[in-house]
Amino acid sequence: MKKAQEELRFEEKLALLENLTEQMEEGKLGLEELLKLYEQGILLSEGLKKDLDKAQATLMELKDGKLSPAGDV
Image 1 (cartoon, rainbow, N blue to C red):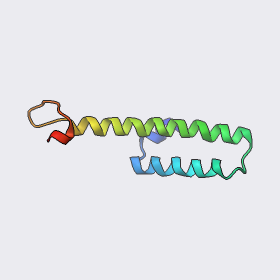
Image 2: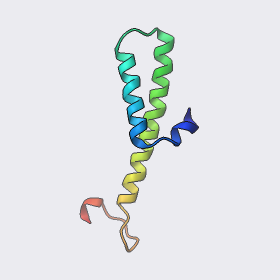
Image 3: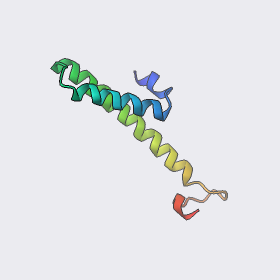
């Protein structure tokens, strides 16, 4: 799943995480299924954080190659 996850867009990963959360909150799954979904959710959230960190780094780059918070642009 990790390799396939890297090919997904941010919005797709977020939708998958939301879907996993909904499934877990329904209360119809057994412990093993919940643990599998939880693990998948952790992997998705790590991928989302990585995407957000990358986007933040991109926003902090300026024309001159200097780094500055995006709000200062």
